[in-house]
Image 1 (cartoon, rainbow, N blue to C red):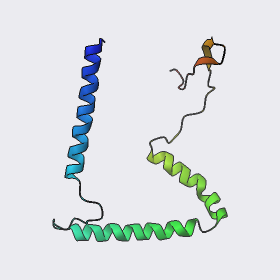
Image 2 (image 1 turned 90 degrees about the horizontal axis):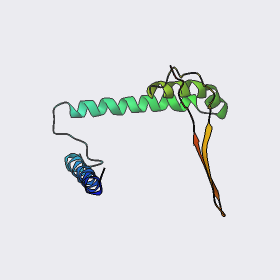
Image 3 (image 1 turned 180 degrees about the vertical axis):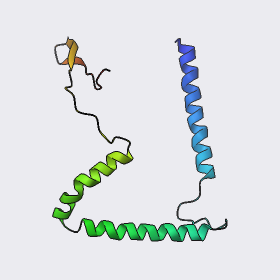
Length: 121
């Protein structure tokens, strides 16, 4: 890619990011101001407030002590991985890192390594 094309691509990326940021903030609801203009808004907000209170009360009971937290930690960790789409997790395989090149100078040296992170199929 030549310098002119690279400059144009960078310019378009910056302008696109600025335009997206401006439209997203221009259309956003101000923080702390509940939306009361549409039918059902108050009911939805009351429901969400009640759910947050209910979930918060149960969470506090689960982790009242350090032992309670340590007992629940594996379950919470598994739920977290599930929410991220990482459950079931694949088996861990050896890293198989290989040094491809070492650059040495008077003051320091730099090593370039390659690691295979996923098993080949």
